[in-house]
Image (cartoon, rainbow, N blue to C red; front, side):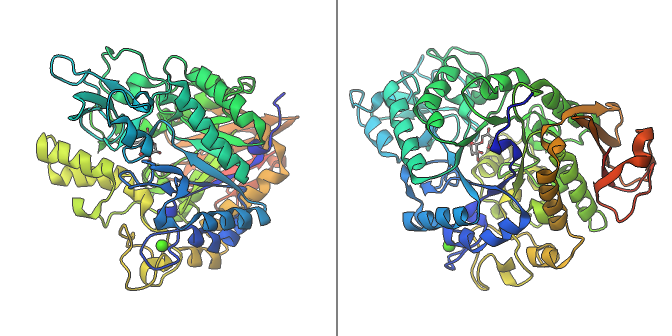
Length: 552
Ligand code: TEU
Ligand code: CA
């Protein structure tokens, strides 16, 4: 029997503040902009808002490079704005989950400003410094944003480690002062009344003592390092166990066995994790996002079903299709052509939210926002990953032509997720005032795809998501039922069953534009059609992108 926790029953909505709503006409979304839309989010029926980082930052990686953990980024407003947001959310019964980025800080954080001053500075050991090896970096680890993961600091002649950009410096978690400083900062936020933490690359915090590994990707080299579970238990004792928080760890490079260690019900570490395996189905083994491939439905099903069954009764899944680091799901795993977009977006929502776990909706997913095909040259992009990768693969190494790179970016760039939220059909989509240039270009389809349109159309994706959120509150089987994949080899249809207290939930989804015939259960005659994305039920016939949820 599963333990029951409020965070299992909840639905999370992820807000990328920079792109959500600009309230003061500078082209950048902000905290007052979020406050403006709390009633919209309440109407959607979500419970928790996860905010991407809103702390002081020079924005080398849009806030994932923090220079002060206890200050609000000036672009986004002030601490008074944050306090108001927290209060206004709580008044409506919405919780706030903060992004916690403690694998690294900005090079402009005062800890690093001190650390780089000299080898005997008290903060030296807050980061990871190593002498050159034979006149070179200590090893050939590659950072996530192209180039070496080591940066030479001329002043001291030593290298510092950075798994991401050279302005995102990895903290040294072996140093107990680092851990205590972080826990203190976390408690400061907990005392403010926040409701949880989404922990950025939290499985990368434990670095090896020596750096002789032969891996080349710095992420895979350090993932799930020795002592990581000790550090998380220490964090749990010092912070998490003291309040009724919800935690989700972002963890690249994990298997379900690792997942059970981080998020097992009996582990006293985290509540759940974001695994990455299903985000790799269409990427290139060598070039990653810079070359994409068609995915096989059987592979996607196998990965997600493995996570469903292997976590089983032992740990809890975080369910997501996209976030601020991923392309738009309707463009990636669905079909964003006008004839199919709405059907496909609903189908994907239904397939995901009826699995076992806590679902995460990324802003704009609830109206079926798509990838930005109107980004046609590298100058349209802003993301450090896109810019550095283009520089490296096109300009330096000549592995890709500009056209090939842009095709890949249109399919996979993180900027696909970061275009401004499409609120209405007016100039700048209601994100900012007419005449202002938004920090990142709009998707040019905002006149047809926007919140105002969705709210006015009872058959919109928005109302399908709203209904899912309502049904989740009414039927415990949706939350607690077990999961069983049907017909794993079927390349066109994803079907699965859930079981709970004598009831069965059957989810059937057609991932193609073809009309198919499938028979799953003879009990369907008495079954109740809980939800679907067509008006009526054609029984064994599955129309293009049709998805149905039966209860019996
Ligand atoms: O992402 C970590 C991560 O492993 C990847 O998703 C990464 O963003 C990208 O795919 C590399 O190819 C987290 C944050 O979500 C991301 O926005 C940050 O850039 C990154 O950490 C560094 O803080
Ligand atoms: Ca603003």
